[in-house]
Length: 493
Image 1 (tube, rainbow, N blue to C red):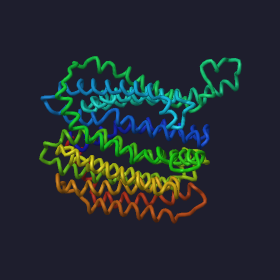
Image 2: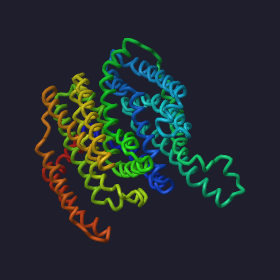
Image 3: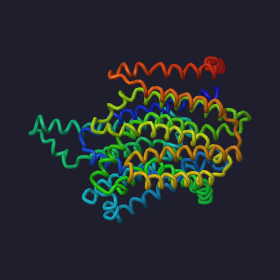
Image 4: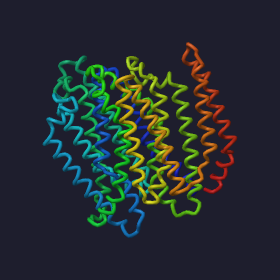
């Protein structure tokens, strides 16, 4: 099978599990913004930012390390069990630490009176860290369908429990007060049910992965673990820095805005509007899941560099289409959050473009992974994190959440540019920069023109913007001769 078609197919499968799952979770965003005031949703946004950071630390780059050594015949049989033992041990130590220092951690996170939230999130994090390697193994073994099934099951349970506790139980208690719903539901728990649903879904993940774990021939090799950790440690730094770039804004905002109530309110508004860029995030996530094992497997092919260049170009095309689609039809997208949160819609283009450039950065990052120069990835990520931190500290106290949106965009552009120029020196690939620049410039011009289309009727306004997307597609199809490419791919299959 043509390798580009194979990558596209696996990206689609991973994308279906991610996109459908996130779309189902998207349905929860309007629910949360309707049920909870901005300050309460701000607590959820703030805690989930810490969760994302903690999960990266708990997996400490072992997924990428596993992919690297699983393709080496000398280590293939022992790398999974060795890495799994390591991550399980550290996850249990993490849980122990949380229980020992629960009170100070709860106070720092502004939930001193609701420390049970921290316990639930810690248990969920440990489960997710432990199951990260079994999921990586499914990707390495090219089993996207099983991966998708488990992920969608997880999302279904999460969604179902949210709807049960946040919608059904309150409704039943109102309509049938004698039914005894309060025996299983407590209205005072509130946003706590969000974390309960996450924990149960993660526990179910482990249950579904047990058949795969039982089949493993368990071996532990300390020397191999040292090699994996040496390779993965810069990846960990990259991942931590990436999470700083993506989540430090939501972590710092309650600390940078002097008025505590206003700080949580702005965090809630920012977090809700940040989620409107989720389509770009989903595309990047699906692409990343398929691309990482793909470029390792294609590395020895003589035409691999040409293939990598084509992948980046098509990634840019699809990413720009997503940007224009969200921005041109924002009047539809914005219904996902309650009107009280719409004041933050201005950050959406910044966040979309920031995620777009981070996707390009990931695609470019193959140069330091294939050459085992992962320290450069750490340098880039640390520099990006420093920029994000500095800009947040400078801008947020002055212009609120717009400062965070600007910071993440500036950081992602600078990191992508630096990676490109370093890659040209250490692992030169002839990317089609002229066309990539042309497509980006055209998309930005069309977006700029779209802002001048002012029609009171939302449907007519979106209809008037549609020809702009058609213009972009016509230019791309003409330049790329995509019909010819598609026919060639079909003929090779």
